[in-house]
Length: 538
Image (cartoon, rainbow, N blue to C red; front, side):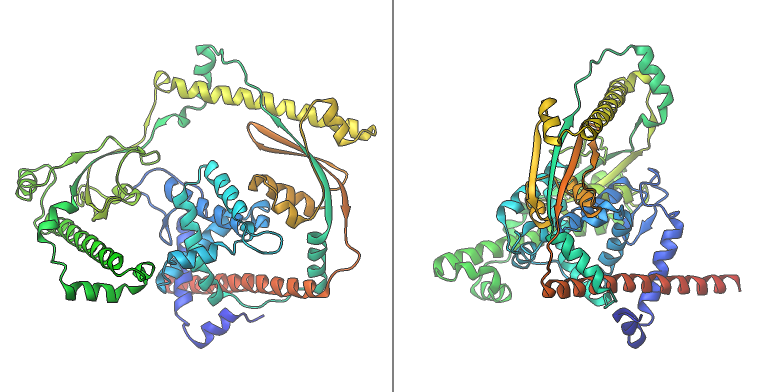
């Protein structure tokens, strides 16, 4: 099948995707085909389309953003079938493409409109549900996803829809597939679930036990890579005296370029005037502050000033700038009270003795900072005494997990035997004094809109699609929680609206078209790589 992408390449940019995808393949080869953190040594970077796959931070950023996107789009099949890593790699490529063709970030209005279309935020009628939005975003934050990561995932989803439109095509699907999926979504399911929680275990371990565990797992206990750094700050208020005056012409031109920004003030001329003056001053102060910091960085480079030298001290003094020290930084867990952009801290990893100063970064309060790398402290092995508290926690978790796994397995066997003897799931739960959640006659769409943890709902959906009816299912969510699920009834509608089958078939063909487009990309990459190898051997 010839997808839209193939036709596009044949007609127009023949060179672009082969060259781009050659880089993909070569990058993948040089990263060893792996995706998780390959190593912590920063002199051995594994760059894949702007992401350093040897960095736990870059890897976590990409994986977190991909996972959030998958959840918000209701694509539980990707998580259930274990396709998150490959989805993350494709996301990295598409973000790279979006950057190359300069697809901008959405403004607030476009982003708000886009967010309201996420499947998980909509009710069964497809309308935006604010309570679903609040509960799901709170659930994500509870899982250690910060608001900045969630926002970045949404912004990139907005941009990637344009990339996907460019590379997507139409594929072929069978009507029977579409009918089967519509039946599954329209069927009514009845299921019950109980959740077991881990018990608190006594923590009375001997030093001998802990030391044995430490020796077996010694490689786990290292001081992480740390950074010794300092910075200088350019405060915007220091530039107010040299700020260009807010003349009538200056304000008029400023307003002309930013009319949409002031739409909400148009009804009151005095308020509008004050708003324009206020924004004009902020803009000019920011411009002057950033320029001063940029000039400072340029002079450090141009004059080849060595950090800590007499020239360095004289240069700071001549510019009336004070160097400020930072605490020794573990960049995996930076202090939360630093008023410095995260990007500026990450940028420290790219500095060395030759280039010890960063680019200019704007802070949250409108000032500008330049950071200096003083020293990199690479990972070092901890002694038992230094690691003892960590060892105690890890050993306790291991013991707790073993006890909890045993508890879950024994409970599963007991419940399975009771079901075979004719007891209902509800009766077993009552007998064992366990809290039960009963969902009767719910469609998949209705189950998606109940207040349930997204990861738990994903696993549950997987079992429903497998039609595990009248079968006890054990799902261990984490080290402290285990679900026993029993799907006791399924009612499939006898007749299906033909329009729903047609709509679903169109969706399947569109999805398959995207898959064909991806396959085409990989075929082009392999051809390009083969040609490259031929050239290399000549």
